[in-house]
Image (tube, rainbow, N blue to C red):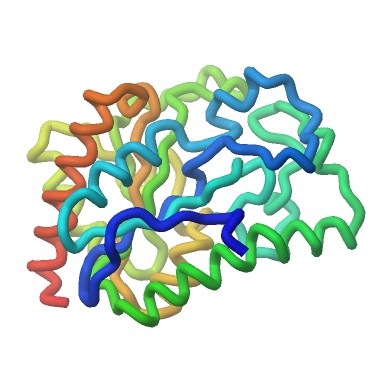
Amino acid sequence: MRDTFRVVGNPVTKGILIVADHASNHVPDDIDLGLAGERLETHIALDIGVAPVAEYMAENSGIAAILAINSRLIVDLNRDAGEAGVIPLVSDGIKIAGNAISPAERIARLDRFYHPYHAEVARLIREYRPQLLLSLHSFTPQLASNPKEARPWDIGVLYNEDDRAARLALPMLAKYGLNAGDQLPYSGKLLNATMNRHGEGSGTPYLGIEMRQDLAANSSGQKRFASILTDICHKITEKLGQ
């Protein structure tokens, strides 16, 4: 089934593969989340700016991307399948009434959206053996549920056990003048399901990135991030000698 992902760019052996779990706010016609339409334009529904940045990057030879084509509110692909939050009932204080579904409906939704996406990520890694995975996300500069929390970083770098690419990326991002958070705005030790599975699980180096959404909300910001991340990813692959 192809109603859960799309691939942009041309995957090549030993290239760079971007993985974008939260790239869309689309909700299939046969699912009612019980939300007002404007909620789907906010960070609870998608990672703002991720799809355009991935698409700009995939215009470069040797870079391809797999992008989720449904909202993270349908299924959060960056969770383990057994986690309660994989089909969220609340996001940043907003109740998702349509996700109060039966166990059978939960299994059916995972079978429809979650498992095909992860099967395709695994296939791309197995077939093309990328030098680097770029896990691309973005974060809101202010949570409605915790408005006093300061989130001043321009970009965050996340990782779990495998920090090879992260350690190289942090000083590179600083040279670009970015305020780069190390394991910020949250830690990859706590939230890294996709890269735990496909990066660490396959031994493939990965770079977990969180762009600040207000800086990635327009084309100029998106092109800037795409240019910086393209350059950094190439430099990381050279240094790692993959």
